[in-house]
Image (cartoon, rainbow, N blue to C red; front, side, top):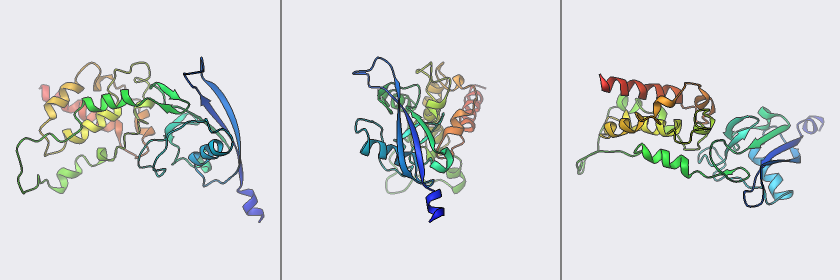
Length: 241
């Protein structure tokens, strides 16, 4: 019984809140959430605060299993998914705020439309002319492996909104869009590389990257984001030779 009692946490949750409809500027609200365990997630703490203390607290979440990416936020100063970050990692003091660089709709909810506009700009779909008929567009295991890492992106925006270049300059296409472009640029079946490279060669494309590695560190899927960006840069340069 003593061991069980020792594992029970009282969490001090600090939330940066902002409702543009009524607030002139953001403010911090502190919740004390009792009865939590080290294996609970930050999302569980937010649920307890919303369900039992203040129902107006706003945040996104859907699958709650690290697949949909909807609950990305800044947790103790670093981007992460609230459904993945455990209290055993944060300790009893948890500070959360909205991901940076996107307009805040309310509290931890941001407007994702600018992010998805950049995503769509790189043509994130297979471009292949001709009807394959009743056969598949085949590729070897080695060809498939070439872009496997960047297929893991869940569009949570954690990488893009961790980028210091993106914060003051929303026109930067951002790491997530470049990752999506990478996935198709190196797909042996795709024929849209030239169009994607033209977009990424623009002044708001890959050359904005300063190789800070924030994006790689923030990715909840472990994608080698910075490496993917460098590969796209090299492809653009080789295409110009």
